[in-house]
Structures are given as C-alpha cells and as structure tokens.
Image (cartoon, rainbow over all chains, first blue to last red; front, top):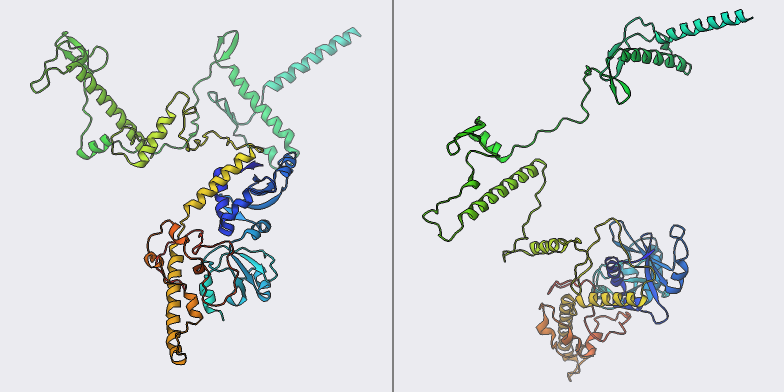
Length: 159
Length: 387
C-alpha cells in the first residue's frame, strides 16, 4: 500500500474529471474529514485517514481492500474506473442522463440507450461527454458512459 | 590347532592375492581404446549381458563400469611420472580425440571502411621491411616504435614554413597534429567496431556548445552535465519546479504511507488547479453552436412575425421575442475566432444561458451563470455545425 505518484494521480484525476469536472476538489478536500487515495495491488482506494491508520496494521499480502475502490491501474498504467466509485461520483456529476424505466433494464444489461429511451438530460451536454446515468427514480445506474449526440440535436428531434 | 590356523592364514592370504589379481586384471575380448590425454577409455565390446533392459541390470552395469575404470587406471599407472611438491603426478600425453566446439562459429565481421576501399581499388598490403637504414645515426633502426629511424619528436630544429605565422610554436603544432591523428584513428576504430556490432556510437552531438543546438541536444547536454560530477549527479541543485531525476537503481522510492496529509492535499489541489487552468475557458464549438442557435431563433421569430402580421395588427412580439434576449452582442465577433480568455464572454447577460429551443425540461445547470461552461477535452472545431 502506498500513496500515488504524481503521474498516477494525474492520470486518475483526468479520468475522474471527465465525469465530475472541477467538483473533484470536493472529493480531495472534504470538510468532514481527511480522505486520501492509496494504491494497493494496482487498485486505488479512497479512504479516510482513520481507516487508513487501522489498515496500516494489516500486512500487505493479507489486506484485500480498504475504504472504497475507485478503480485500478492497468498494466499499461491506464486508469479504469470501477462501479464502486459511483457512489462518490454520482452526487458530483456535472452531466446527467435519466432514462425511462423501459430502457433501464436494457441499459443494465449492457446495451446502448436510444433516443426513445431517454427521459431527461442535462442541458448543454456536448458530444462524447462523460455522463452519469440515472433511472427515473434518481438512482445512479451502473454505467457512466459517454453520449453520442449533443443535447441540442437530441431535443431538436424530440417532440 | 596352530598349524591349522597357519594353514588357514596362508590359504586366506592366497585367496586374497588371487582376488586382488582378479580385481586388477580384467579380461576383455576386444582391447579398450585409450585417450589418456582426455582420460578417456572406449569399450568396443558388445554388451551381451545388457540386452534386456530392466531394474536388475544395475549390478551388471556397475560391474562393467568397475572393470573399465580399472583398465583405465592400469594404463594411467604406466605413464611417466613427475614429482610435484610431494605428490606423484602422471604426465598425460596429448589428447588424440578432437572435442566439438563449445560455442558456435563466429559470424564474419563486416569489413572496415579501409578494407572495403582497398577491396574496391584492388590495393594489396605491401610487405614492408622491419628495419630501415637511418642516415643520422648510421645504423639500421626499426621502422616505428622505440628508437625508430625517423623520429619526429626528437628534432631540435623545425624550420618555419614560408606561409606560417612566425610567432606560432611549431613544436606544439606538431604535437597537436599528432594528437588529432591519434584521436581520429581511435574514432574510426570505434566506428568500425560499432558497425561490426550494429550499434550506435554514443554521440557527443550536443556537448560542444555551438550556439545552433536543437532543444533535444541541449536537453541531453544538460543531463550529461548534471551526471558528470564526482557523486554522479546525486547532490546537484535543482530548479524550483524541476522534478527529481528518475532513480536509475532498481528500487523505486515512494512517499511514505502517512505522509503529511495536508501537504498531499495541497499538492493535489494544485494539480487540479493547473489541470483546470489549462482547459480553455471559451469552447469554440459551443460558442459557434450557440451563435448559430441564436441566429436560428432570430429567423424563426422573424418568420413567425411575418406569418402573424396578417392576423394581428400590432406587432405584438410573441414568445419568440422574449426568447431572443437581445442581439448577439459579443457573439458576432466570436464566430470561429481563436479561443481567448473567457472573461468577456462569461460576463454576458444571464438570460442568454437559459435559452432553449424546445421545451426539454431538462435539469438546468444550477450553479452556472455563464454560457459556455467549462468543457472537458475541448474540441476546437471552430465553425462547424453540429447535427
């Protein structure tokens, strides 16, 4: 377990910033406690200082996980976000997409969301923007993807 | 009793003797071939007892090995011996068996530049004599080396040539010329070697300042200069924002687990700030899209006015008028222009931000008064209409 290097932090921040933008500093600098990112077995964990101090007492090979896993670094040092990060990204997401109940199941099983399945969408979402997908009941779904068409084009076709 | 025991002893001694002899002498149909230089004994006798392989052959194999070894040792005992520091040593003859190569055959080296040239021109090496007659000393001296026939360095007088500067030191010039020749020769030798091993010479491209060096050359020169100290660059000072050099040893050094949390937070915030500042405030695509949107709405409103002129007398501006929100003030100059600092644009009237074409009812970006928000990964395709 170790802190991230400059390079790794930069790569990770760039990835996360695609979804939450400058709200990332709210994750870094929290009013209710000191939270930090630690790397263990190529996975990045977001953990409070208190838990970190407790976890330091466990030997590295026996330690499975600590805090929340945000993602992992692949062999070529790219950062992959995991769904466990959704709880932290969803409240700070800049661009949100709500999908209709009918399209929800299809989306959860890995299919694309069509225009017809789109309920609401944040305005000014540009093409290929990273978004967080919600169900109509405001539950973030497993899936933060990028959208293919802009809000403008979508709503110009909508009735 | 005693007699019996004596007889017994004698008999026993005889039996031992016979056994020893039997042990020492081995009967073989075909004589073994010995290569004593390699301590090798080759047995050509057909292995009759070993026809059927199986676990019971162990004893027979062992017996065979013992016999052949005994014969080899017998041969060794017949060699002429030496005495080396209280040990009796047999002098082995030359080995007769030729052993195969240990390493593969060396591949042919590429020809050096001179060899290529000589081959091309058909120049053959001239055989030169080792000794040359030296007039000065009146004896035969070698052509080069110690006490050679014509030794440049031993001259006490050098005539200044006609076109040379009289103040020049001719002796120093000679020494300098020799050094240059030696260096050139060495360089060519290294080049030939590099060509033979298909490698590049470590070039000193940027290391001699000429004033016309490229950025890479200068960078390399800086690196080399940094490392060329007695501690191999370990204690060199760094510029304020320069990163520590990569540790070239095997082990990487990381920050401690519980470092200074505040400092960590600060550096991360700083990194975020830099990341955000690098993104352009004004996204050209969004600006142009916005501009086009405004124009579209203007035209739509105009068309509606035309159609409604017949119906209504007063030029009552429909809902389209409210939507206009004023003429495109700064947008006009912005079309396809280079992304500048967004300060001027962001301060525009807030109503422009709320314009929408159809009632989408999408969630309005709450905390955003400005127009073109910060774009991640801004795409600078100015002027392209996005469908």
